[in-house]
Image 1: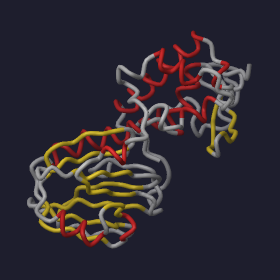
Image 2 (image 1 turned 90 degrees about the horizontal axis):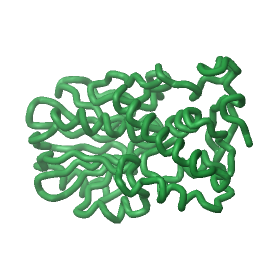
Image 3 (image 1 turned 180 degrees about the horizontal axis):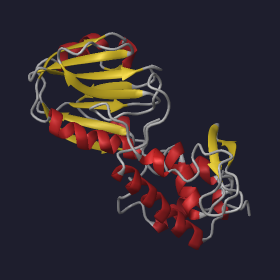
Image 4 (image 1 turned 45 degrees about the vertical axis):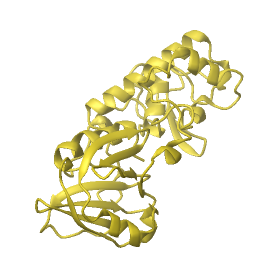
Length: 277
């Protein structure tokens, strides 16, 4: 699933491609892709809209329109936004097509059909359950310590909870825990102040590296989790220390990387560098 670095890359790279562009017409071939309004009204309302602002909240893209409406995009497992020439054939799994005023079109593709789009006047209700952004001032050590205090849930599970911190998912949780030397099944409340500080820094570090590398692209072409708006892959997968490196040597100690399941998600760690206690 695209996480904060992938979504941030989309926002940064879509802005120069779409800012000021007008949607001449829209088409939806899989109506359930549109969460709000219904697909028919989405098509009617998008026609004539002009893109103005580009931002992100957690894993949500917020594409502001000159009318005051916001197009919200959540890619989920395999969603992609692509900007292509108008004469490019529409590929399979393309569920939304927006033809632009510069002989290009914006496509939403999603092989697994879990991604969703909203066209709303106020994004706040959709984003209301999200916790602070990882780089925001309110995601500080006091906040993190308070949210972990007394919790028996595995720390990996809490890092995936978007109400704790917005934007962290499976890839970057594994990578942050490795850098912090914390076992993913440790009870969150068992972390001491030094470990919380190390984890806080590691979360920010891996996310910044992920953004610098334009995100992580995994899987084959038909079910790739993420590609950039022009179709190019990200590069952070080349920097993985543990994620999807089962039985490969740990880059720090050489012990084989182990895979377990935590919170129903495949989880990768080094049993030597990340002891259970």
